[in-house]
Length: 384
Image (cartoon, rainbow, N blue to C red):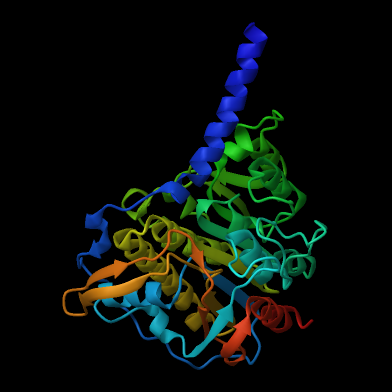
């Protein structure tokens, strides 16, 4: 009897963890969340457009999950007419469809960006036959470059996962976490501690990471002081909270990852995800979307500060898909207020924007497929 009870509790525990990972899909906004009321704005700097090299030594791919043109414009309005994104003069559009669906999910959309191949919805960097596809992070690693991942979600969630893991389904969080131990990634910062330490196989992946030479941290105030070495930072059991709870985690984590990775003289590849723009779209919450869009833009600002000074760094900002079909129905630059309506709680099929800044930025204009973004990054960074 006791053994059966233990098994039941264990299964329930796994189920609760999975539910916590995906609870945002069922969130619904109240009417009061349809309007974002203007808040204190932040100053946006204009960065120079001349660079040291024609090809980049470093590439930072910044993914606003669920970020369409309307989400960008909601942030532009909320910050009273200015975003760091204004510094990106090379602008295009990405078609986001997956191999098996007109409307992609984050796993297939992310896999296209990571590997240059379209696959089925739910796939984590495996092809239609569930065979592993090599990611741009893995290829950069093999070429001697430093690599990193930053996300406001669990680091095991679909978008960050597709850069480092290979699994047939996106909800295989513990298997995805174990895949981190199969690489030599230099820095990763995000949630998901439970998938590393509270596992059905009994492994403690944090201790295994330490044994591999990683410095392990959970507190962003300690994380931001790390200057070199290998860093594994898990800042929440599952996902990090919303902006009011997590504060400046994303801009700080972005700046920290860049500082550590830039120690590699050969160069680096870094992916930064503003994960929760998507969740605001699923909830149809204008407030949630705007808060996350502004937070993502501030992280972009940190990347721009480095890229301007470095002169050999390309920044590419895009999305895996749009979420919610957001339509702005009211607001104003003078007040910073935004009112929106939504036809769906799910992803949509529309093209998403692509912004580029730095050497090679001119390659990212016009209408592209999501796989083209990978191919252009690979050619510019690795020459192949």
